[in-house]
Image (cartoon, rainbow, N blue to C red; front, top):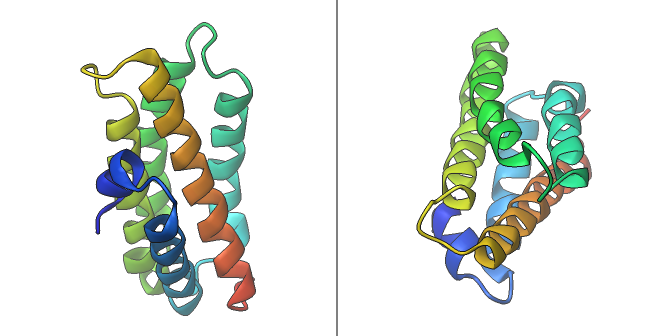
Length: 130
């Protein structure tokens, strides 16, 4: 199941947890470090704190180029695993910012995206990621 489906059609969150576990382990196996994910997660948390106010949708949209930049900076041994994270987050951002959905649905989708990102980081750490 892809991240867009998880964000839009996974009411109980079971698929979200499964996918996060798989990606978290892959990130650990791909030698992606917590600090490599931290700057993106910190920015996402700042967006979450201001969600629904001012330019939060623009800031979320601008996270996509930051993700691409972080992916390009990765060492070769971490590039593929980090690319999977970038792909999931980029698709998730697109699902959140879909102009065809209501504000309430956008809020729900953003919360799910943040839950997914948190779960990925937790599973990465649980798998022994540094």
